[in-house]
Image 1 (tube, rainbow, N blue to C red):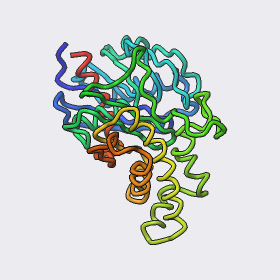
Image 2: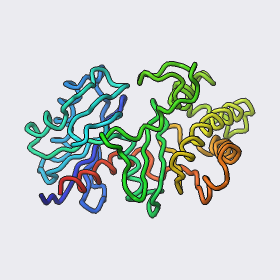
Image 3: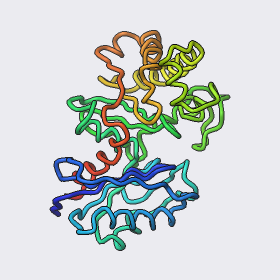
Length: 296
């Protein structure tokens, strides 16, 4: 199937970000809407259909890629579970959308989409082995090995935010306890400092010692989780993205220090730890890229 354009969508718990792209990845038009609350599958499906038709009324895009916060099935048509969205278990979203849109649809994990976007047009371009973490409402991410997205034998890999840090730590919606998400998400940061992360970043930038100490503590804990991921995958590059990454200048030094202390030199040889380049646009771009790869 040939399509002169493609639609990429990043579906999150609070916002749905859509983009209409040329086949070479140039953003032609974008749109953002609030995720319906509660974000049940039916309500989201209705809003997606309306938003896609509004974004592309002339139907120039015949393919759609959608990133969601959770694992897909091997065929990339069913959302197996989205732990932070109510009622999202074994949702055949592609089958629901295709007859309504009259366009082909493919699904992917949102962290994987962000990584594919960064590898195509952003900070991971030219790298073969990359681990990415998206730091926001939850902690997602993805892994690329030898230039290929690593999704495991059943399509559910990788979920770096769900690795365990503390067996007695706070409970996670995944069923785990003390996962990295429970120490690196926005809610985790608010347990360290009761306020908005942007305000905490502004205070740190103005030299507030307490704010700087909070970011240092946050970075050290994140660095413990990243150290485990480095031992597992020995990547060339670790990227952090998501809303919290806007404050990376305040916590990445502690991350790098922790990794240098915990990971033996051979396992971190040539390693870079850096921030994503595409911001909130990486997910929808990567979803579009995956649609092109899978459906054209």
